[in-house]
Image: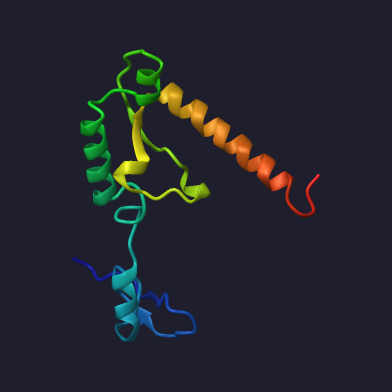
Length: 126
């Protein structure tokens, strides 16, 4: 198999070339280890979030909790914060509930409106 074409090292101000797939010369190869692709393991979407989400869905029996409070039976498709993260709500099971997509959209729109009103009412707002 032919060798890769030599390319400049990805490290700033390094003038060496490399044929490594990660793009760093031997001197800077340690920088390649911290390079990751995508969102896996960072924030929501990683394994801890999926486990917590499944735990909440099981606790709520896969039913939308806002619909249940309105005496409707609707399957849940999402898990949402009761107190939004933007308002200081923690990502713990006691602050999460299962929701259907329409309920989640309505709640998200209400939260966005509240945030816009809060921002507009601050110093320098209209």
